Length: 446
Ligand SMILES: Cc1cc2nc3c(=O)[nH]c(=O)nc-3n(C[C@H](O)[C@H](O)[C@H](O)COP(=O)(O)OP(=O)(O)OC[C@H]3O[C@@H](n4cnc5c(N)ncnc54)[C@H](O)[C@@H]3O)c2cc1C
Image (cartoon, rainbow, N blue to C red; front, side):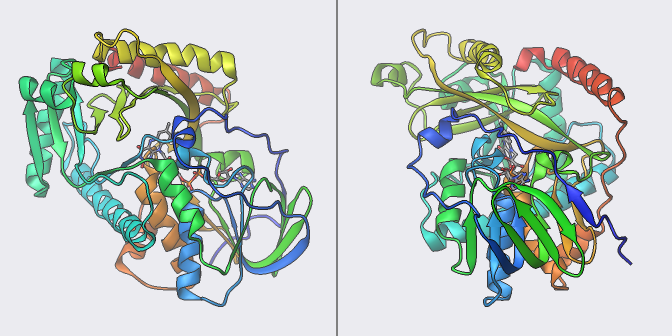
């Protein structure tokens, strides 16, 4: 029995949060543009949010019910939220912090299987539509610069052994040659993760949306009236639909969903210009790579296919969600310090782009996946790793709405729900304290 959630819901005025300075967006060929919703219309389905989750939902509806009409609405340019702003790791397995219980490992492994299912879905679409996104199956390097984090990596190896997952250990000398920096002491390279240019991937998925999908950009949903059918209002139009999927991830609380269960954290990243031939020579002409830190507050760093270096080393509680130029300039300095530590010899290398983006977090790291009422379905909160998981959840939320059965769907439905979080200002105090402690502990890896 599903509880009635609400009959009418007004969403506070939507404020654009996407800055125009995302490096992936600027270095990828321009995406097609789509109209605003400027009429009153009807559809079998409405999907709110055109990121990996909403897009995957649209593909799945078209696959199962090809004649159903689908309206896909985004408040901003489609795909230009977190789905373009992330670091481009389609993760398989993430670092186990060590000292974990058997139950933790089983949870980790179950998550690995779901991630793999999401990754396989994406791989299939990339191949089918020949999406140009620098798809790279070389895996990712989990790296440590200090001894405390090296022991975390050794625990991680134990877990990978028990799980039968393929990996390679890199000691300092070979690692320095492979990456072109001698900052790191030790690494565990897991083999089945994929690196991409996220803007290339999401643009490719948008360009190949099925014909039954009408995409409207810059059309924030500002009111949802829920009855036998659901009526969604945007600034200049409306849609009435039989079924609605909400796929707004970190913006769930801003849209009136799950404010007592999930919260956004804001990350900032910077990307350099392309390395010159002499700079590339100076670091030994390495192949592209992606490094994830063994510390949760450590830096994510990539050498991209077009020879730029990306650094993402800030995580903040920033309830305004978007950063203005001044706030970004301060974070850019922090990103810069991460770049300098790793590449002290590249003295003239500057960042060309700096941007911010939001991830959705729950206290117990559980996602949101549910039927809110008869017509309304909600999926999101991937706790920072949502390229694969969002793609899978978008598919599975449609399966759930259409009563399709599968092992994956059962697993997702049986997961624990996000636990309650305290109201503000207690939430602010708790998050600021926790992040400050983590930041201090992870200082050597930022
Ligand atoms: C800096 C950064 C680095 C990250 N790195 C990684 C990584 O390496 N690997 C990984 O797997 N994940 C990573 N993530 C997380 C990943 O990007 C997200 O989990 C994923 O993009 C979520 O996709 P989504 O479709 O659910 O949400 P989003 O991409 O956020 O899409 C939601 C959409 O909803 C729209 N929307 C919101 N409200 C409304 C409304 N009222 N009306 C209409 N539309 C609305 C928004 O405009 C947005 O386009 C990172 C995130 C950030 C910010």
